[in-house]
Length: 462
Ligand SMILES: Cc1ncc(COP(=O)(O)O)c(C=O)c1O
Image: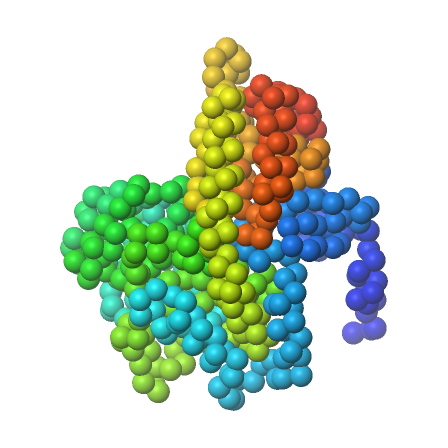
């Protein structure tokens, strides 16, 4: 190979927005460039602190997306960065020894998790944590079937995708894992029907569905699910990748119903928003059934799992969440924001529902009805369903400098998931911006024709 022309780190830091777009088009994902450009979402952010980020031009934005739950501590939390700096001279990766920091992380996680979820496996992402949990369930139970929920989101690797209830993501990759079957979320009778043969290894669910559109199950559902899984010998897996670490007003969402799963999946804020860290944690006897003994000790591994920098970040993140009791802040501020948003729902008919728990909040929009939808043969309704959330998020970002997004499995819902260190003033700012948008535009067509003019043009061209 002749000497390749490579960018230095300093050159990389100084490339402009146009160049970033070009590199993405050529080297990464051209479709994504077009999608981001549609709503002018491809800003170049160069600085971040807590809830605030700045673009290259020095404009200040509020981040109410919070990396889908990975930024419970906000951007660049100083204590987490300090912890990583402390281990800079340690070996980061050295598999020929037991990791010192990861041993402490295992200890600390066991102290904050409910019940006897005391044995952990560390990896690098949410999807990987789910993969590990599914493998553990199969190996421990010696059964094959997995039951999951419609509308769920567990990640996009093969196993995680096989239990993710959205056809759009699954279809191009069929056949996926065999033996995976869906039940409606929130319906314990449907679950009982599926598992009564006692041939199911595990039931996996999110205690509150995030990407499904922030769906809170009926009160008592988690308890009922626990009881059924125990009765029929099914391992219960809670995916708390998005709901964990204080997000919903408790350290873990399963605590709202005082329920302990057999396996819990964690990621996102476990790394303090600084390092990629995932984990599944389980009870010792379940671990032993699957991986007990020297012979099985290396059946499931990960090169970077539990590396020193990641473990340092996770130790600091958990300590800060516990010391500052961030779940209480999430509960208080979440109640406040839900109350204010429900007042908007009373006033503006385009808001169909406001729902959530703690600082995991979704706003669902009403589909347009009446003449205009009839005239377009239902097309406006369909467009609204797919793009309403994105158009509102576009208005919020471009006019009010507030970052939000729609939920992946339900684009008619925008999510509000700010860092838990958000202030009430910042919450007011967002609610006021939403009110200004609802007041100005009377529904989907209003927003589409105004803020999203270019977006609408492109949508109609498809
Ligand atoms: C509940 C849940 N599980 C799993 C995942 C996948 O995590 P990752 O993107 O780190 O693979 C996500 C990501 O949004 C999630 O919300």
